[in-house]
Length: 476
Image 1 (tube, helix red, strand yellow):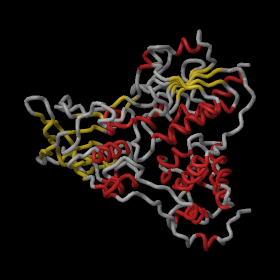
Image 2 (cartoon, rainbow, N blue to C red):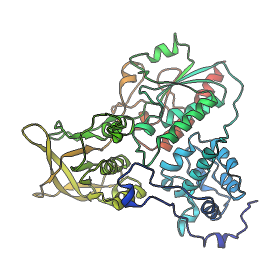
Image 3 (cartoon, rainbow, N blue to C red):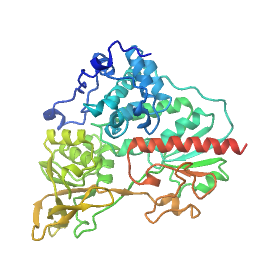
Image 4 (cartoon, rainbow, N blue to C red):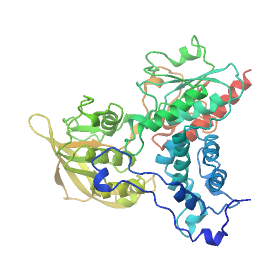
């Protein structure tokens, strides 16, 4: 039985609650979080909208299997700590996913309320209880099974690696996460800007995993400082999970891409997020100064939106998205597009760069572009962009940031020749067990699928943890 006192028809009359946020004119000049979170009264009002339906399609739409109906029921009862603990049974990073998960495509996209109106704001409610738990300091960590004596090495501390680590340590295994960089979190730390995901929240979630017993080691470059064979051999690990992500940038391969002022989004965001270039001169991290410059970001995904909004906050005179399709085809979240437009980001749609232009000192001065029109759909289901003859023009810019995708870093694979990869360089793994061609070695997340979302990577981490647990217990 639900604690909701309202009949279904009355619940459906309640409008979806809006997330308070910083005013656009203020937030475009700072790196503080844009969305401010729901107050308790708003969270309760939103929870009242849940129909508590028997089908609970929202659950099937969640890649990590959060028991959504159950945690919303606990919100209605006013037991926010229990609600957060309920989420943590399946999701070790609730304060993270409550902020960056594309709920509109996952759980909320399956909500029956969305058929005739707006779906339940599941992401807002997840964030609310996770923040409440964090602010009270009463984090409800899940119970751990007795120690098995088995050791698992996880390569990469992004969402797939952290999710797998949380599940495996709960099953009683000794888990060590190996990270090549100097801070734990992977793309959560180096890729997503502070104004969308404060790094203090990532660090607190990592600390919660430490409290569960996960060991973290930084500055370990697997493939150089240690190999997978050494981990399984002299280092004494019984299984390895490769979760290195897709951090190798893809470029446009057009003339002038070598010019000073042309970045990959990976490098640009890493310098700002991980190396704190946005806190200059407190942190003297080199980055080409965006202040007073015209900046163009090429791409239409969430990374492109992160980069262009970051450039704006660094003082760009103009900050533009340049995308070869229309806004309808942009893969970025609608909320991020909305926020960017409110902040003053310009959108040059149906525009394709064909050459970067520079001066005699090799500094970027402009970008030659071509107008596009949409033709028949391609393999992605989106309409293919087709060049319009004679439509070339030049866009004056001094900074260009290329955000058109990534590929898997080949380092681990190159040092482990018996792990099979596909022609794109991604690791081949069984879609169910995530077992690779090498016994005892599993792989999941972006290093297998290519660039995807945080929550899909976490789902892969959970599947890998289950498969590794089965593997280790079968070996007893």
